[in-house]
Amino acid sequence: MNSLNSRQRKIVCALAILVLLVPIIYLGAPLSSDVVPGQKTAVSGGALAQMRHEYELGESTLGDIDPSSAAANLVLLGLRGMAATVLHQNALEQQDRKEWGRLKSTVESILKLQPHYEEVWKFQGWNLAFNVSREWDQVADRFYWVKEGLKFLNKGAQRNRTSAFLKHNVGDFVGRKIGTADESQFYREYFVKDPDVDEYDGADPATNPEGKDNYLVAYDHFIGANERDDIYPVKGMTREVFRRAPGQALFDYAAAITKDGKFELARAAWEDAHRVWTEGFGSEVFMGLDDVAYKLNSSPEEILEMAAQNGVTADIQRNTVDRRGKMLNYNFWRDVSKCEQDPLTVRARKAVADGKKLYAEGEIADSVDADGTTISPAQRSFEKGIQLWAEVFDKYPGMTVQDDMVLHAMIAVHYWKEICKNNGRVPPEEYPLAEFVSEKGRYMGEVLVMFNREIN
Image (cartoon, rainbow, N blue to C red; front, side, top):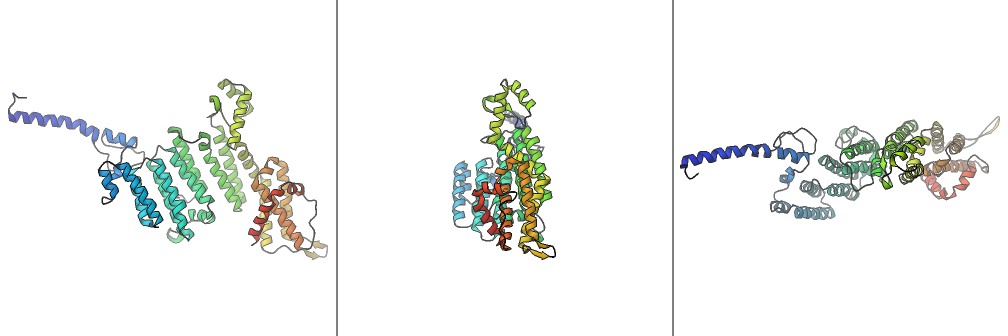
C-alpha cells in the first residue's frame, strides 16, 4: 500500500468499499414495505431481515413509542426491560385513576416493547376485559372493554404466530368471558349484534368477522391453536387438556342453545360435538405414563393392537385409557352428547319448555266439561315431560348424575305439583319420576330457587 500514490490508494479503498457493500446489502437490506409483521407471507429483503421475520426476532415497532415518554429515554439507553417495568407501573396507576384513554395508549406501548412475551398479552388482555370492564355501569360500556381485551389478545396471537398457547387463550377468552360472565345473556347477543356497529345490525368485524355465535368463534380459535400445536408444540399445559378444547367449545355451544330453547338446532349441535369429540379428539394418539401410547376412543381390537405396539399387557393398555379418560371426562361428555342428540331427550325438553310457557300464560286451571274435569294444558304438558324424562333415564341410566338433566326433570315435577295444588288437588304419590325425585332430594333447594326465578 505504501508503494501506491495517494490517488491509487483512494481507488483501492473505493473498490474495497464497493466489494464489502455486496454482502452488507445481501445480509442487511430491510424487508420490503408490503410485509405485515406477524403474518406468514413471502418476504423480500436481506437474509438477516428475512430470518428476523421468520423467527419473529425483529422489533420494528420500538420506534412507535412516544418519543417524549420516560420509557423512550430508557429504550435509547438500551434499558428496554426497565422501560417495560415503568410502563406496567404507569398502566396500573392509570387504571386506579380511571384514565382509560391513557391506559389504552400505555398498554399499546408495552406491546411494542415486549411483543414476544406471552404473559404480557395474556395479563393485559384479561385485565382490560375483567378488571377495567367492571368499572362501568352500562352493559354496553362493559362490553366495549371486553372487546378491547379480546382485540388485544387477538393481536398477540397474530403477532406471535408460533405460539399455540396465545391462540388457545383467545378461544378460551371468547368462550368463557362472553359465554359465562354474569352479563353473558347480553354479551352473547352483543357479540353477534354489536351496539357499536352502525344500526346495530352486525358484529364487530375485528372480533367476529363472520357474525357467528361466540362458542363457534371459540371453536375456530381452538382449531387454529391445535394446528399451531402440530408445528410448534405447546408448553406448560397438559397436551390432552389443550387438544380437547375444540370439542368442549362445541359442547358449550350445544348446551347454550339448548338452554335458549332451540331444541332442533341444539340436536344437530350435539351431533357435531359428539363427532368432533369421538372421531377427532378421541382418535388422537397421546402418551400416558411410562410412554404408553393410547387413544381415548379405542375399540377392544385397538386396545390389543396398541398394547402389542407398546410392549405391554392388554390390562395395562386398558387401564391407561380408563385413567386418562376419567381425568379428561371423556366418557362423560361422550355419553351426554349421545343422550342429548336422541329425539327422546329433545321431546322431553320441549314438553317441559311448553309447560313453562303455558304456566306463564296462565293456562293452569282445570276446566269442567260434559265428560267431567279436564286438566289444564300446562299440567298435561308437564305430565308428558315427566313421562319422557323417565324414559330418558331408563334408556341412559348414566345421565341420572348429570346435573342439568336432573334439574330439568325435577323442575318439571315441581311445576306439576304446584299446578295440582292451585287446583285444590293433592298430587298423587305414584308418578313416573317419584322414586327418582326421592333419591335426588339434595337438589330441591336449587329447584326452588330456579322455580322462583322463573315465575317472578
